[in-house]
Length: 288
Image 1 (cartoon, rainbow, N blue to C red):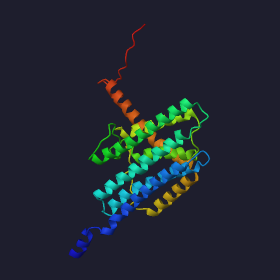
Image 2 (image 1 turned 90 degrees about the vertical axis):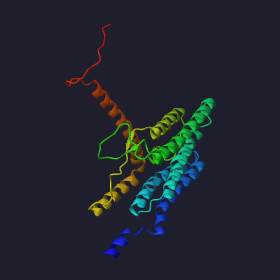
Image 3 (image 1 turned 180 degrees about the vertical axis):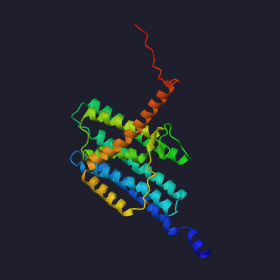
Image 4 (image 1 turned 45 degrees about the vertical axis):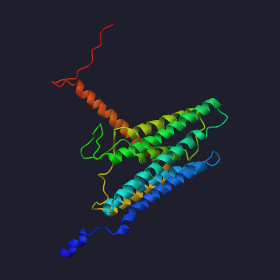
């Protein structure tokens, strides 16, 4: 019994510590590939932008797997955490900001108003830089907060992120680019909308609003075969309709935080206006 007990408590082998780092290295590789493809993109070769968006999207599950594997194999370390944060800054901060700038502003046609084009490019560069800074601040807050709580708490049986996680923010940019198959922005009005979307995503990262984390979902159920079939079906549908589904998933997750905040504000206002007898006090309007 003592030998069996000792084998159970034996620490993980040194070689196991490299396994989570391999997934983190894959995340960094995807970010580097996305940067290279973004720099090669052009109106005549828009597929490079699409490849960059797909690389960022592919890095998102890799980013989620390295932490889970480290916990499952009991190989979590401070080195792995720091490496994971650096990988997130590169792949979900630098790569999407470069892609967003080149795809949304750098490719604006020279035939449009030169002054407007120059201003859009300048504002776009600033907003993309702010996206990168917000993502870095979001990671720093996540690493230094022991038990951060969102301002608008949700269901007690669910776990939430405080602010939009940086992989999801990068996924919004990647999903938009992939939705158009990498065809860059050619219109000043669309570029203005792109500025607003990037700014909104950056704000959501540094906000204290809640976003569902999905950490209560486990893959260790009693029916692994059914789960594998479900995952296979989901991946097949995603591959067939990747443009629409990824776009809907990314924007749906982003707006879930906005709707959660709006619902929480409405409930607070409702409780404040509610009288002790249960009636709702309404503001009176003086006659003109």
